[in-house]
Image 1 (cartoon, rainbow, N blue to C red):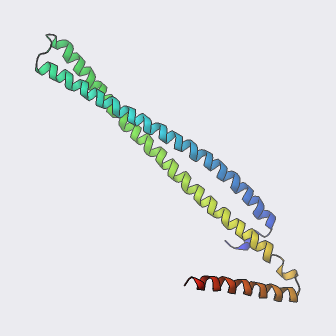
Image 2 (cartoon, helix red, strand yellow):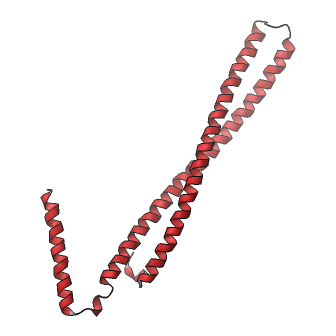
Length: 168
């Protein structure tokens, strides 16, 4: 982004304020999505537990029918049929719950990405504002101030180079 998009520092400051509000709203959404995702994962665990229990129940009914534990096979067949229907329903609910979890995982990931992009943009705007503060009035300073500023920048640059070279 070049400086011509924001001719005045005030424009950048306004953009930064709007950006901070937007980031705060995204963080609120992110936390809501994260809590909802956690809740839905807990629901899925509960559904899995119910399915396991129901499978055990179905095995018990099937074993009782196979070995004639009780004389009342019609009631056992009815219980087995109901348990199998309940299992079908729970499996359908489980699949729906997985879809819901995928949706919230996408929301969490997308919102996280949005926050990262907005934070990067915020850092860039702050740097831009600092550059404008430093160089925005370059045409209004005297020639000796320009020379002094150039010398100061060259010294800072050389100091940074020396520092970098000391690690090599």
